[in-house]
Image (cartoon, rainbow, N blue to C red; front, side, top):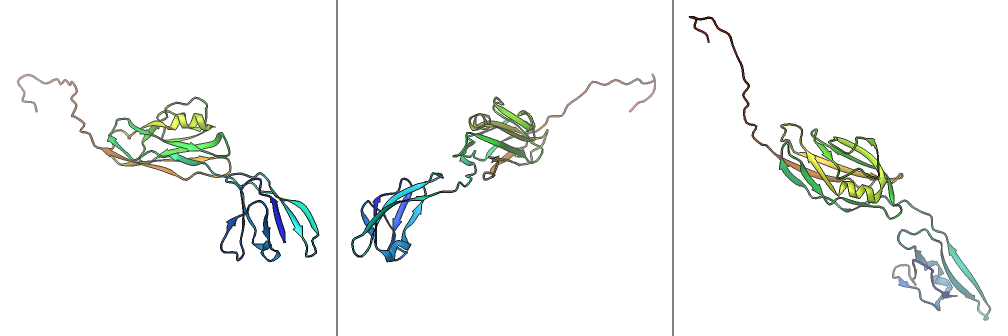
Length: 219
């Protein structure tokens, strides 16, 4: 058998006698030889730090030996995630419609390689600001598509309060999509439906002139 003398440095070390029911390992727990195969370790969330625990082996005649078990944890990329996503919005054609509350996060980084935003139906959108951003598509103002990178703080400032405007005299509903990339993987697509209401365009008149011949009926 073995005795766990020092528990795991992080994560969750568990034991079982049947491989089905599991409980946490505590200091000085004795694991019988037949059950050593049922020790399992779950690393701490979003951590690739090596995990250690110390154990002592006992034989049938009382001999003992102690050692430290080290488990190296390989890093796995965690893609950016949306902390909050803007709700669907509605507004009139040809008028800037506010889109708020988009917030992106990444547990492993303070910056993103890219944020890609696009609109259907030829609508254009404008960020709240462009400070700290680097653009490869668009410039942050009245664009139909944008791709930019920067710190997560700067990106959230830019996308947390945007405006969207329809194409001229168009009341076709549209969709705005946002996708973040950390250099390895994409976030889920954040899609915002935009309902556009038609607005009457009043007729316009322009001054005109015409020359006619006297004593002649003219239409």
